[in-house]
Each structure stands twice: as structure tokens, then as C-alpha cells.
Length: 421
Image (cartoon, rainbow, N blue to C red; front, side, top):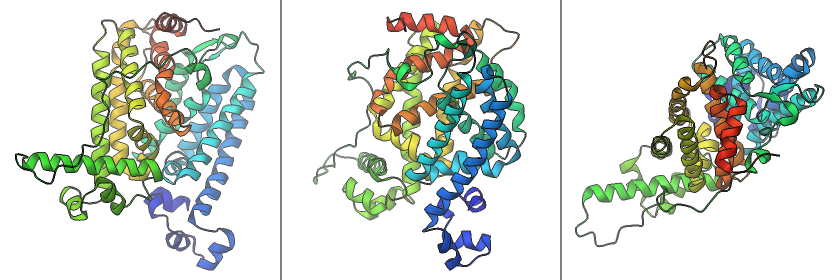
């Protein structure tokens, strides 16, 4: 199951392929597993158990104050020494449906609990990274997943960059403010929607009488209805269960019209994601350039992006939850958004206090990946509409590596008008 899922993708990991690779009969397979999902989940539990043992050992052998760094080291070591295992846990689990995502999220939550139990043994005035460990671990998963898909193997070289990056968030543990989503969300009101904020809605069907309507307008209307119907159905029942019949029925269009515009359902989804990514980049860029100074620019870009995600819950769900199931093309489009987000961090170099150790490219990727993990976790909890509450957390992740954790906290206090307890 591990080999087939990693080499061919979860969608191709049929019982027939798995038993052919394993060299066993179909009856033998069903002696152990009820179906391919049961096999996949059992495989995930076994591989995740090995990862958790690595994390426990690394954290236990290290200093309590470095429990966060120890967990990251164990995860990177696994990806470097067992890339197929890492790809299974970090990528294919996201493509294999809600049950697999539950397993993935439970593994991350367990790693976070291991870290917090170890960190609790350090004196409360000991500096440790003030950030959500579950978001960080998910971000590291995402960072490694991209590199594993590219076939990169020398992943341990990332450790130095990630450790220096984590040190920029260090604060006395008793003073931490950002370690849970609840704490991070407590100080930011959502506010009423602005009518000027982009919301993607399906256009209404054209009237039967199309006098004065150009072929281009007809084509655009049909494409928009198909793309919106695709993401709406995927939001309701998942990409894998979405059929072209579902899409055409929701879009109120003939099946032949679908094939005039798209080769298959995957292409329809890729076009929808392309549109969503372009809109998100444009929205964040507009917010960024609306402010004069860089920290304020980061705040406004984050504000614009989190509000865009909250106002477009269907797109947010499909982008953060279903994109892995859609395939490599969808992941590349989503990575474009993450890469674009790191561009907003470049100006931070001008504000960095210690230029002898400038923020590295991997650390900026880690910032974006961690922010994306926060969006994923909030979406899975059903809190996508409350994403603007995470704006202070997003800002802190972006600012602390450049201006320092204390200055970042002061900046956010001014922006929110509320001092953290």
C-alpha cells in the first residue's frame, strides 16, 4: 500500500494493485482488511506509530527547552531516511479522504502533546518558541512534502535554517501568547463584510432568448457555472465522489456543454483553483501595497487574505482540503499561492535586526507553510468563516523573524488595541 500510494497516488491504489505488489491473493487481503481504505488507514497508523516513537526518543534525549526543535529534527530525519514513509504520511494522507485526514491530524496533535509535555518540565521563565506546535508540525509536513515530490533527498540541510527560524519566536514560556488557535483568535474581531471584498458566486443562467449576447459572454457564463458547481459539490461531498453528472446538474447545463469547455472533471477543478489562486494573490497584493510601512503592509496583506478566505468558504475548503485529491496540478497551483506569499516577506530584510543571520528562503517558506496549515486546521474545524480572527497570529509568524518577537507583540497590541493577558 505504501509503495503503490506513493508511486501512483492514492486514487490508483486499488486492491488489485496492492495485492499484485504484495504478491498475495484477494482472499488473503480480505482476511486482514475490509477494503482499500481500511488498508490505507492501518498502514498510516503503523507508519505514524514509528514517527511518534522517533519524536518521543528525540525529545526525551534533548533538553526540555528544545522540545520543539527536537520534534522538528525527528520529522526531518524521517523524511531524509525514509522518503516513501514521509510522502505517505505528509502527502497521500491528505488525498485519501476524511478518515485519512483525521489520522494525519491526530498524529500531528500527538506530536504537539509530546512537545508540550516535555516543554512543561522546563522552568517557566525559559525561552521557548511561542507558536502553535500543531500548526508548526503541519507546516513542516507541507515544507517537506514539496521537496519530496521534487525528488530531493538531502533534507537534513534544512535543519539549521529551521532551528534558527524557530529561535526568533523564543519568549519566556510563561509569557507565551500564540500556542493555541483559541489564544491566537481571542484578540481580533471579525468585523462586517465589506461590499468591495471579492466573493465568487456562480452567474445566473442566461435567458432562453439570447438576443444581444455574444458567443464569448455565453462561453464565459457556462464556464463560470461549471467551475462554481464543481467546487460546490466537492465542498459538500468531496472531490473523489464528485461526478460530471453532479456538476452539470448543479450548473443546470447539458453534459455536452461541459465537454465543450473541459476535458474532464480534473481540468474543471484546476481551472477553478487557478481562478481562486489568482484572486487570492491579487487581494493580498492590493492589501500589501495599501500601507506605507512594511509591518503595516504585512498586516494589511494578512487582513485581506484572511477575509478573502472567510468570504469564500467553498473555495477555501476545496483549496486547503481537497487539492491533494485533485492531483499534482492542483498542488502546483496552490504552491504558487504560497510562493507568492513569501514575496511579501522580502521587504522584511530591511527591518531585520541581526543581519549576520538573515532569514533564509526555507524559513520564509516555513512561515507560509505554517500559515497555510493554520488555514487548513481552521477549515477542518468548520471555522473558515472566522479566519480573520487568526490575523494577529499570521502577523506574528511573519514579523517576529525580522523585527523580533517582543517588537512583533507590541506592534500587534497597537493594531488590536488589546493587551494580551
